[in-house]
Length: 282
Image (cartoon, rainbow, N blue to C red; front, top):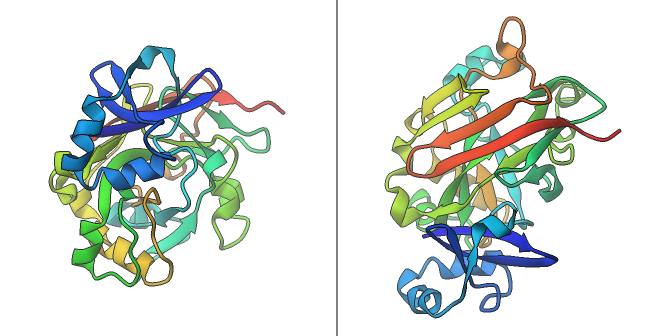
């Protein structure tokens, strides 16, 4: 299944994609996160989907698949080639290097991402995001994988100079509408082995990043298990697993995102996230 959300006028709608339609389940579940939890039992969800109304996707204003996750955690320097190009990390971290993003720092696919007035050092980072489907705490890696509902492309847009103000990444990762994820969550049963996915990031059609998720330093099961060791993960929580090498600041000269640029993060079997860069209003 492919789960997504959007606005129909002033109403939040969410459900399952069926071709160019959204099967609207927003009257059957309280939140998109509740739908994500229900997707863990597809046999129970299928008759609800079959009996629910459909909306034209073209009539909806796109949103991230879960507009306001309870937690959005991101893993830094989790590919060896990104560690090698880093100007702040020398060795691969022994544990996942984590930071958080706020929901209002992210938009959906097809919407504009914003270069803030405070900086022109706007960088791209394509990633695979994991979406949790069952609550877990102190999970073993095998239990962690069983708690994953699905996956989505993620663009961890970064304001590099603000990221480097201190050793903490939070300011550079949380400018309003600076990143994106979506367009939908593809459930784990459709994705297959998440350790064998190819990720690419392009800017205006030019290839900037490419990697297999097999190259993750800390694989998905260990990331999720580690996070669950210090906080309870709930349905709808999102974990971005890290970006490969090729980011803009490591290029000569640096390749910063500018208004009019089109950024695409594509993951085979999962989908393509597309956003155009605009300048934020001062």
